[in-house]
Length: 183
Image (tube, rainbow, N blue to C red):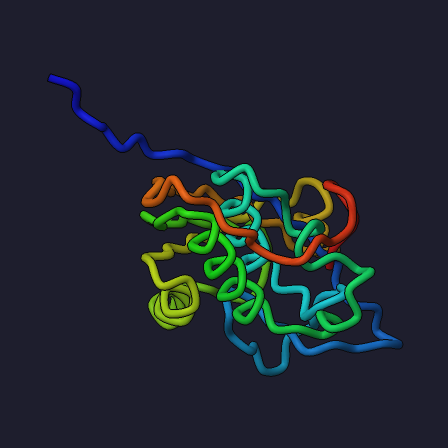
């Protein structure tokens, strides 16, 4: 007897953004939340590296490109876009490609903002956008590297997906070549 076992697929996403220069201040959006009074990040979109890494991990798990493929800097409609919007759109693309989403886990590295008090709020916002559980953790780099010097924030995410359909539909219109810059 043959059993059709559904095997999960995993993906990794990494995103990094520098803090915006003081002469061009930006609002800080991180983990789907606005952080009042905090220096924001530079980027083509809102610079939310937590949401961006989550979206990239989903694309990686499915083998359907990356953040730059779908939301690259050559796509003016995504200039200033919310990371939550991008994550929601990534989840839609993943599902259209025939995959279900098991979960996404993200860890970001930064000296600030103080994340713990808003962790549950962030996880709720990102989980709603993805339509699946998203967990977020934070750490520091003990003063080492660009994150330790307070020059920016980095995030690493993993995603678990599983095929729910053998019929693969086009996920999105073609974007830039794989690996193209994003923001």
